[in-house]
Image 1: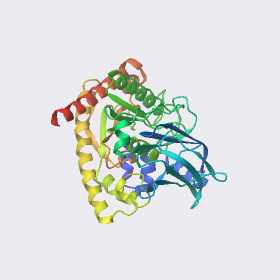
Image 2 (image 1 turned 120 degrees about the horizontal axis):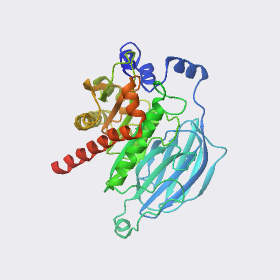
Image 3 (image 1 turned 30 degrees about the vertical axis):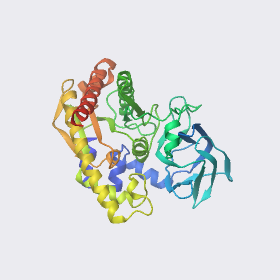
Image 4 (image 1 turned 90 degrees about the vertical axis):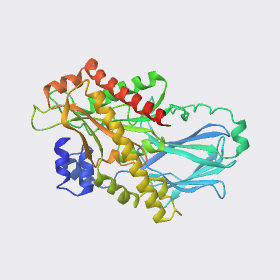
Length: 395
């Protein structure tokens, strides 16, 4: 990935964004030749929960994004736009818990979900889950929470959805999103005998196990199999899960096989400037971009959020380098900045960890061996423990 950063200075931001995600220039050309991505199709709609908290799950055959059009505050009807999603006629039915009825119909070249509420409620979070945990479909998840005081007092616990989707996390636990870099048709860098996508997935799974064993964290994976997940979808997963921390795991590469060592990237100033441009196209990054919000106020909120988030990201990056550096060599300039798409969420502290150079024989052996790789993973877990322990001491 190191050579990719050099290319950032020589390419437009959109092309560079595709490249840093692991796509080759040839892959970009092929994608452009093939035209826009096929639309996602709705497979089914499911519900779980009660009158205190309700989860809505839309099963899709492809990744998709959603946009909150109406929050239900005025008329108890929540409307969510689903661009590039197709439906065969209107889909509708009775809901459950906080949802009285639901309808998905065609609108504006995509689909639109309408939820008629049985009481006052708010959208707590929205996120996309890729296939995993035994599920073969993408799952667009909407969590609703009652806003009536009386409902909160008498509310029983949220029941588990009768599907592979997990129940909404209790916020007593910190939510950590682990992003295994690359995947599926995007293999990432290649060492002498292993692809980056396989190393990152193995490390991400080991980190998930390490964190869940402590009982202090709710872990969400952007992928749990050899699946291609779009870069934007990875950011959405973190934001819709209301993540407290996002860590993207990668393995570096370079032309000199003697170069080795781990490094950590946080969002650069130029990357932060890109957020505003992305927000003009969609609302998948920031709640402040919702319709009706004054544009000047939105920009102020965005700037404040970005500044605080960058500070938290830098604080975690420092802890991460200290712990990882005890288990594997670090690059001489080990804390770097970049404009990676997966670091763009303005309200989720995020880092991209290069665990070593897969093009270096020693680093490749370290990353390919479960025992030595797990030592690095445990160091990452120690850094996460220390980061949140420091937050508790400050509060």
